Length: 203
Image 1: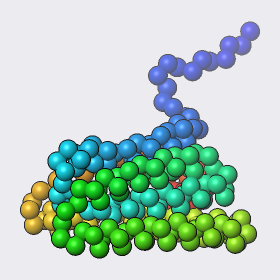
Image 2: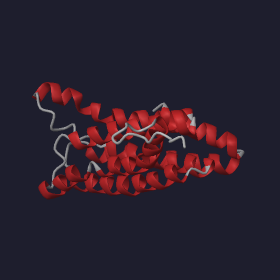
Image 3: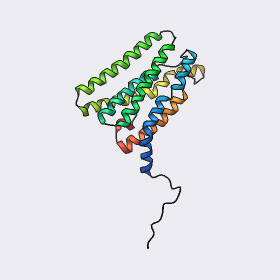
Image 4: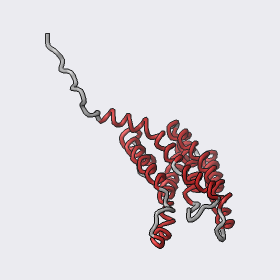
């Protein structure tokens, strides 16, 4: 009787298994990314000062996450809208904590500007979803999400001038930066090979 050769122990994961792994990990990596600023925000609350930290990462987290919640709902992608719902919730907490302890000159005006910007984005996208056909709304909101996602991941660079002047990277939180890298890697692989969705893999 002809024997079928067995798969050797320790054989590397197949491409299909790797894609399945990335698809499973992507939403959790997204949540991890949203949780990454937590140590920084807890430190802000403990010190009762935001120091040189910028507000943009937290306001853009709210806007970006809400846009992806809308996109996920329109495209029926639970992994997208559920993980980003966590981002909206945590982003709101970070924003509130930051504004509570921010004492820099002109902080009030800056906070109002960020708040109004996030509110406008939320209302605008809710209107798009109600007025336009589902596919058209998803396409527009998806492209908008790509833009906001890039803004979110680039937002720590707002503090780059301060880093160069002080020769200290304290104002660019390392946990957030590392979490963003892992998150982007998983979503890029899943978006390209599994979902085949430009709006998912590009940003």
